[in-house]
Image (tube, rainbow, N blue to C red; front, side):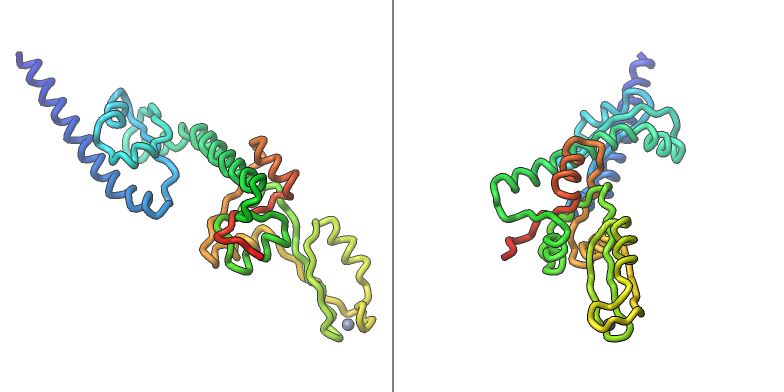
Length: 237
Ligand SMILES: [Zn+2]
């Protein structure tokens, strides 16, 4: 009888503990969810308690939908957290791949339906960014073009172009004289287009998604669309 009583007390304590964890988690994660900053929750712990926690009514139901993995870990405290992150890396990778696939499929859907709510290509995306019309900027991790500004120090002539690093070497070699005044005093500036676009997106409060080359969709996005695209806040033109 005392064994049963002991068990009941333990169950009660476990329940109280999970209730407390749930309350803490709700307080910490619900504001993030509301801001759209919560991508997923991974729960770890030793033994079957974590499953009870997930299946029970401890987490807010909106947060429960965000649980993307439950992982067995053996340590507690900070070591346990570290172990969790390590063991969750596969889950995180898969989760990112699924998300990425959906994102690109959605992009293609807009394209096929010609909704006018997406754009692609360096020139078009740049224009959309300048207008502040970008909702979500998509950049392939394979994208590596640079932006070049050539300027004549004598007459002030200048031009800006986007090209590959290799094309830049050819361009620089060819442009020995200013096309306007013939001066050889030409100054070249060069910067990374992806970095420039990410900065522009951040300044106008747009989301940025880096698209990997790990999925078929990611490959397609890079090969068929040059690796630059955007979902728009409104139609341009
Ligand atoms: Zn000149």
